[in-house]
Picture 1: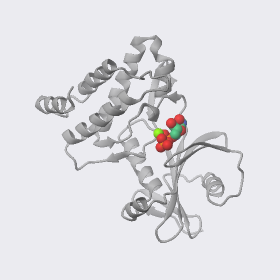
Picture 2 (picture 1 turned 45 degrees about the vertical axis):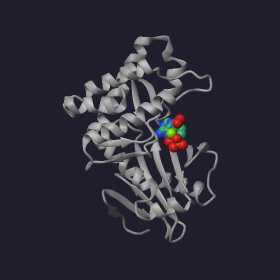
Picture 3 (picture 1 turned 60 degrees about the vertical axis):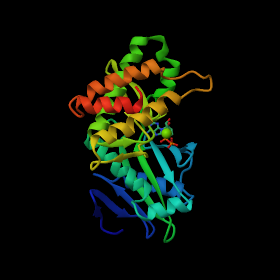
Picture 4 (picture 1 turned 90 degrees about the horizontal axis):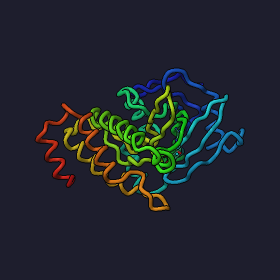
Length: 271
Ligand SMILES: Nc1ncnc2c1ncn2[C@@H]1O[C@H](COP(=O)(O)OP(=O)(O)O)[C@@H](O)[C@H]1O
Ligand SMILES: [Mg+2]
């Protein structure tokens, strides 16, 4: 095995000439090996893996040494993606780096564990992002099924989402996929905790003015939150509840954007 290298804050270890492991802190090599064997080498133990979803990425749940992990496996074959990836880090490595930035900003996300890359040829590199499992249920499901019973409880949840969002904006991240299915909720110490999963579409934008970040985030958020309708046509959040969210969010953002700036954004978003 080769010596470990440090690649912009991440450790890198070669598994083979084509496959690399990127990690922080201690490497659980056996975990990496189990994943590589299952996803790329078609061997090893299969019964610890469960395919959860297959969209742009394949999402697997994995049990290893009594811990649960979630993996996202990226294998793009579209020409645009391949061209784009020519000029930026491989998917899983980029997402792993974003994850570390989010953790450093104290934003609650699924703990990132490692990123794996497998070079297929000159143009194509497949990759896998590995994270810990977050307990609980998707916030979307939760709001539909349980939270309708107590309006106070729902308001409490809305305040928590608003706080999370103000932290994202404060630290200059834009989130292009802010659906309620990408947030998990679980009970913790007599209260409850909300955590972000699916950080693929979060981008650090430290060089963009905060007003623009706020505008981009809010317009996307409103569109997605209010269109997140179940098959029964029940909305997880009503527009009144979204307004509640918005005012709570603005309170949490106080000091970031001056009042005139906020008025402009209100106007722009038709609020
Ligand atoms: N770290 C995690 N902990 C718990 N559940 C997860 C985790 N990552 C993904 N999931 C589950 O898998 C689903 C799909 O994962 P997601 O990353 O949102 O994929 P996609 O990019 O296709 O939306 C999530 O909605 C969630 O239910
Ligand atoms: Mg998702």
